[in-house]
Length: 375
Image 1 (tube, helix red, strand yellow):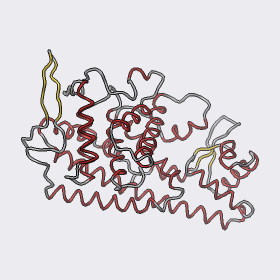
Image 2 (spheres, one colour; image 1 turned 135 degrees about the vertical axis):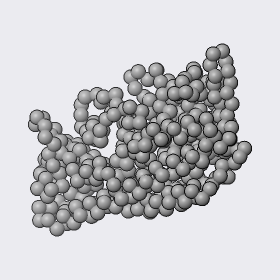
Image 3 (cartoon, rainbow, N blue to C red; image 1 turned 90 degrees about the vertical axis):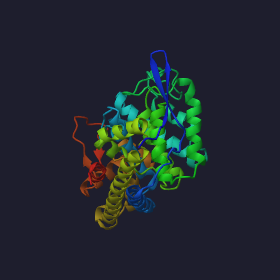
Image 4 (cartoon, rainbow, N blue to C red; image 1 turned 180 degrees about the vertical axis):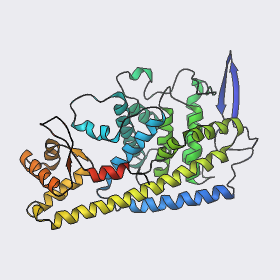
């Protein structure tokens, strides 16, 4: 492939790379037989996943766990490591979260806000949405270092690449937004992959580019109605095959190999869609099984309705204490505490081993196990 994807501009000792606008040209992007087959497989899995989403228990609350999972994985690619338990435990802790945990929490907020902006506010995926997502993502005590919510004003180096000069970023991002929102020359799933590599090549921020670029994929799948909710986490496969991820991104610039990148990209989309679908099916079965226990076990006879409400809450807060549960249920502490005891008796909750006697934590272990399971 001899396609030229941009220009190098030398300024003093620095040689900047400015990518050409999308879509690829000279020659145009080619949907060859291999890409068509991979595209078909990914689209089938996305369709299955989208179909099951409407059957999930308390969809909005359940989606939170999937967003956290993508946040953990996307952050891990950048060397930011924390755990699912750390993130779910944070609301019950009085102490300040670690920087790593806070960044993952920030990612979940950034994705949630960006989804709201494009779905509820009908805003296009452009600078306003991207800058807001970045502001939420990078919000920390030392936030000035990453200038959250602002494009970079200085040069950066990414491996062998020195991205375009800072003053060109608004125009480049404007061209990218135009491609995302008005170009219909390629299928939406392919467009999302091309937009990701273009975003990473522009590298518009001092920090957080990888996470925002992967978030962009999810936003585009939702905006194009390929997904109704952010229930996919392609970062798991980008992380698992991290070396190949960066090689294929770089080959777009060095060899004009958009087709090679798309071949790589479609597999994580297909596999993460399959993974999310299987997980959703098992969680649906778990929800049904526990509701059956609540409706048939005599220990829940007098509190069946409250127990079902509590189960709904556990899908959002699988680590919880009696005080939290009482607030969410709008019931007394004693009612929540007694309900937790019944849940323990029914095998629904287990106590978290801790020296802490007050505000003791309990976990919805079967659900957490499903969130951690590898398929």
